[in-house]
Length: 373
Image: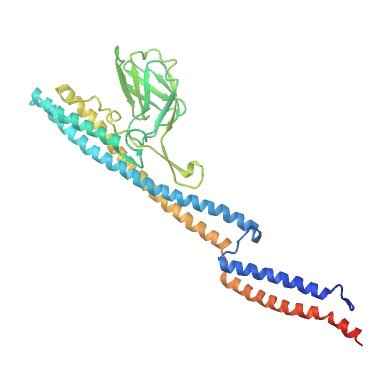
């Protein structure tokens, strides 16, 4: 389209300037990408890509710390397992003393001497259980054991706690009692139908008795007010809580690992009232120590299984981080070969545009030549 000879409006110069400005902007963007190493330096570069990178980056950071949690938790559990191993050695010696005191060829003075060592060893078990900690967190004193939060327990029940080793599962639900036959007591989980029958003796006046429903993982302490002939209003709702390790990046059950470590105190092992100063006590103590040793052995095996699981969760988190970072790189990082090509192109366009700006501005000079004729 002919524009004639005009001075006020130089359309050619304006078009050239527009093309020059666009090339200059692209050149500056190319320089920014090459200097930063990133294809996306601000949201306007790629709005969808920037949002995706932000989400993936947050997940990577979460998984990196989840992996750290797994590694640190392995160290924590190893500390607990080492202490349980020491307690196992002490319990073995205590059982040896009990077997020695349970024989009639040992007189009263000998049993008194054996009981002194026995009580000292029992105190050492309790001390280790109370003193073992990681990062100021008590591990085997019962604070890391799954606790049963029970409501509506009813008359005649002093306490309801989890029984057995720390890793023994206690299924939440509503529990009721039945007296199936004289001398026995049945505990039923109404939610699942699971039930267990134990031998039961009524506590005498001023007495309390602890009975373990081992299959259900529940230990109940009864007092003299418990009446096995009237169980209508006796029930409790149980939910269990224990320790939690965040092994994933989300607030979901799949990203959390629940664990429970046994109560290795003498009360938790049910040996706090044991002694070997009489023949009868020494004989009954053997069984109590066998049960305590089983608890320690079971819990050490449980801790080992949790450690192995945490090792694999750490490997999985590291693998996920690697793949996510590769995805982030694909979206965000600059392709240097491609961008160098773009840089060269826009450098040429900027230089040629600058030269054409000079030529476009020269067009107005022809008006002067007409006026000089």
